[in-house]
Each structure stands twice: as structure tokens, then as C-alpha cells.
Image (cartoon, rainbow, N blue to C red):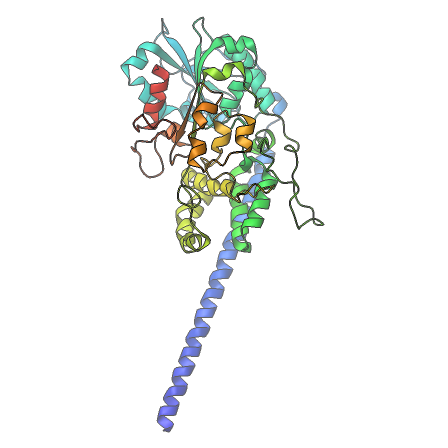
Amino acid sequence: MKAVTSISIVRRCAKANNGTIRMKVLEWARISLLFVLVTFAWISSLLSCLADESQPNRQDQSTGSISSVTAVAPRHALKSIPRNIEVYQYDINPLGDRQPLLLVHGLIGEFHSLGRWKELAEYLNGDQAFQRRYKIYLIRYNSHAPLKEITASFDVALRELAPAGGLTVVAISMAGIIVRNAMTDPAVDQCISRVITLGTFFRGSPLLCADWMQQSIRKRHLSPLVRIDRSVGYKIYFGRHPNLLVDYGWDNVDGQRPAARSPQNRAGLEVVPESRGQRPLADAQPQPGDRKIVAYAGYLHNQYYPHPHGAVHAFFFQPIVFFWTTVPAHVGREHPALRFLNQIIAEAVPGTANGSNILYPLNDGISPISSSLLLPNDFVAHSDFSDKAVLDKIATHTYAKKARLFDNTDHLTFIEGHRLIRPVANIPDVLSANEKPRPMFAWILRDLLE
């Protein structure tokens, strides 16, 4: 009996020790994770400070003049901030009786070879019908300058560039806003025959309202570690681009942007009528030049669309999301970063009770589709864009000449030509059920040759 008792005691002690070891391992794991997240926070703060110190005097960054058209910018020139609007020709063949096609880059495109248009330009130039009709030009400008300043520069540049037959423009992201703003000048509008906008946030984006996004993170996530992780990721992404947070915030047409809560008001969310401290975007009302625009938008699949998943599903898939999206996003991988931001936009807290707790599930990681497709105020304010019946009405409500909406497409697909991990996947336009899916560049080529 004593032997049996001793064995039982030893077993119980072993189990207790094993339990203690497991608890210590979990405790050290939590401490290690917290240390990593705090390190991320420190790095993001440092990057923000360095970015602020490295920004040149913005009053000297753009003069409104235009450089002469030359060959493609050499790589060493891409390290400098353009002071003027610079225009480069993609090849040295004469324009002849062709039309000029101007490719306008988005944020930080001025520091990339060919303004990040390399893949699209090669694809377009490989088509004989395109070559007979167009000659490609590339425009380079300071994308960190204030929106009002860039628009004034484009107003001059587009009038100087346009030939008698008109100018065709392909603009991505913020560049679409700049071009549309410039087209409010009738002289500029007459110079332009067609515009294709790719993921342009004409109404701004909730993502670019820092107080709203931080408030959403606090409300949606109870875990301090998740809050830190999301906040750090947001700060890292926008720490070097403060102009986005100043000029391109959501125009609040739906009244859903909540005010920042004060320490005395933690119970509810107060709604403000407009973005605070932000310069206005282009007028949301229809402009004469809108009938020249073919507006592209995309959205990523997430836990809210197309098949909504509950909290239990999100809990069990969180480790996969962490290693597939969060970690790569923190180390600068762009597509994971867009998946990360897609989730943040989708989880924006509503400022008013509208019957839905998820406001913008369909977005490309930067822009909700309600911002990219030139839609009327009432339609945007009172529509649930996760409802297929609403999507079916977009084509008849848009101000644009044509609206295209691409399934499972992020903000970079328009210039890289592929979605996520399927580089040659055909992409359906959900607004054109009678058209077969095709690669993104084939959609652009189709609309240019139409």
C-alpha cells in the first residue's frame, strides 16, 4: 500500500509540475508577444518622426510648371522629389497621327521606375491595335504635396500636353481625384477625351480618418494585444504619408463618421457632419467631365463578404490570419498590408444606427466601392453595398460613362495585373454579367480601344 501511495504521490507531483511548466510557457509566450508588439509600436513611432523630419518644405515642392517631354527618367532621377510636373515618353517613336495616352501614378509612384506602370505599359504596347492608336506618356509629380497644389499644377500641365484630338488618361488611386478636380476647369475638360480611373476614392476613404480608425480598433477588439497590433499596423502604413490623412478623408455623405470621444464621453459616439480639418475633395455632385470617365473599383473577400462568418469562425482562423496577413503586412508586404487594411475598413464603427454593424465590407484595402464609382449622395447614404440587389443598380446610378466592379481584387491589382496568389486569374466584372472574365490588363485594353 505504501508503494502504491508513493507512486500516486509521484504521479500527482509530475502532473502538477507539468501544469506549472505549461503555465510558465504560456506566460512567457504572452510576454514575448507583448514585447514584439511594443517593439512594433516603438518602430512605428520612430518612422513617423523620421518621416515628419524628412518631409521637405512643401511650399517649394511644386511650382505649377511643366518639364519638357523627354525620354524615360533615369533611375538616379527617381530619388529626387519632382518640383514640376514632369512628362516622359515611353518610347522614342514619333506621335504621328496617334493619340497620346497619359499614365498618371498614385502615391509614391514618382520614386518607382515608370511610375509603377511597367507591367501595364508592356502589355498595352504589345497589342498592335493599341500601337496604331496610342503613344504612351508617363507623368511624374510630387504625390506628397497638398491636393489643392497638385490640382493647380495639373490644370496647367494637362492643357499644355493635350493635342487637338484630345488626351486619354489612365489614373490610379489619388491621381483620379487630381485629374477629375482639374477637369472642373472647362479648358481642361475640353482637352481630355477619355479617363480610366483605377480604385480612385472620389469621396475619400474611412481608412484615411485616423481618429475614426483608432476608435474602431478600440471598439471592435477587447484584447489589448490585438488593439496594439492593429494600431501599430495602421501607424506604420500611414506614418510616412500624412497628406493622405489631411486631404483624402471620407466625405461623410452617409453621416457615419463618429466624432472622437473625450475622456468624459465614453458611453456613446457623437456624429459630426463633415471631416474635421480636411480640405474638400472634388464635388460629389456630377461634373460635365464625368461622362468621359470609366471608373474601376474592386473589393477583397473577407469574413463579412461574400459569405459572412461569425465570431467563432474568426476566433479559430485568427492564427492563420496572423501569419498570412498580419506578420507580412508589418514587414512591408503590400498585398498582405491591403488585406490587413481591408479588415480595418470593414470594421469601421458606425456613427448612427442604420440597421447594419458593418458599413464598408466591399473595399479594395484603400477605398470602399461606394467611393470609387461616382455614385449619387442619396444612393451612397442609403444603400447596403453587400446586398446584390444594390450592386445590380450601380450601373444605372453612376455618373461615370461606365462603372466596373471587380471581384476579389485589391488596390494594386490594377497596376500589377494579378490578384493575391493567382497571377494569371481571369477577373469577373460583377456589373457586366454578359461579359466573360478576363485579366485586369485585358479589361483596361478593352476600354481603351472601345
